[in-house]
Image 1 (cartoon, helix red, strand yellow):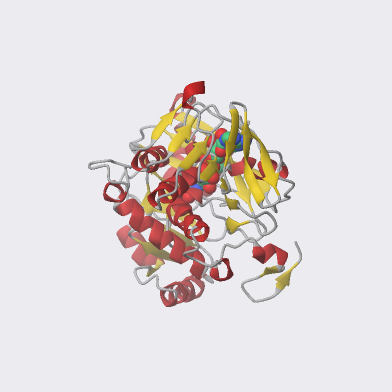
Image 2 (spheres, helix red, strand yellow):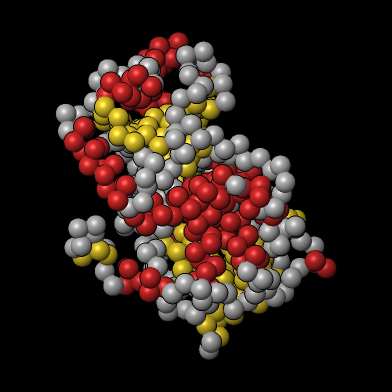
Length: 403
Ligand SMILES: Cc1cc2nc3c(=O)[nH]c(=O)nc-3n(C[C@H](O)[C@H](O)[C@H](O)COP(=O)(O)OP(=O)(O)OC[C@H]3O[C@@H](n4cnc5c(N)ncnc54)[C@H](O)[C@@H]3O)c2cc1C
């Protein structure tokens, strides 16, 4: 079982086959697969606990309804891991609070029926057979709280949400890795062969393989190795409404196709988020991300267009029943993660840039980076390879994009 502790001097490992920097869900999932591949694995986390940064601020949702085949494949595989989590990590009875109440994408535009029918056809052609197209009336018949203005929807019952904190600790406890808390990576060791290890506030760890999985801090960390990654850091809010009789507890995640505003049940209340609610400039990674209390009002007005009962909630909401948190998205130019080797430094691997999808993508992303390390998968067939930036970004239409 994985050992998670603040190391003392006698306990400090000076060598490892694989060092992973970052103890969020991505680092923990990577450690699970690395130690499962027989590698002596060490995770270094600068905080006193795992899953304290972006992972906890997440909406914790999982979905396979994507547009791109590589995202669909990644999320389908990841959801299967979450569905069988206790068995996968071999912790009988371990509960990650997986709620598969579905994801309902809704459109309220006149183009909705045609656009969503075409989208479902494409998704099915990419292997996502269980996504359904619903007319506006069909959506309302199943989910009566959906607005009369909704013209079409898509639904997948196996999408949903979970506890990202429990999943992170499950990966850690189910692994054979060591987790050093309160251990900050402050530099990289290089020699003629490439990467030789990391410097930390507690001492040096020698290793020929280091995976950066440091969430929003990944760019800053890579810079210590002389590497500039194409990552932007953007603030994102989440609001939680405590117990409320108007929230249907059996609802799916409801998300607006074009604006992206979304809500879902959370215990006896609800959670809502919206990336576009406030204009945000890319900024520096932060440990404490400031909140803007205009967010809940803006987001509730927007979700009321999808589900009108939100107007009633907003009108009578007490501050004692409203909780606001913030985190940061780590975003790449094509909104896909970077997973795999950094080509110019042998031994340096990346598992970063998941935007709003790092919880849902962590199992398959962790599996993939370890398969690349172990040589079981070639980076030439890796859709999340860093090489796409050196070769020039290709848009879905096949055009080269300027970075
Ligand atoms: C509001 C919001 C909603 C979201 N909703 C969803 C969602 O519904 N579904 C979904 O899949 N994703 C969602 N996301 C995105 C998701 O939260 C992230 O993609 C995911 O948590 C990234 O995990 P991580 O482990 O890479 O990063 P983090 O959780 O940020 O972990 C990185 C760790 O690295 C550590 N670290 C940094 N620097 C160092 C160093 N030098 N030495 C040692 N340790 C270091 C940090 O302390 C931290 O613990 C959301 C994000 C936000 C902000």
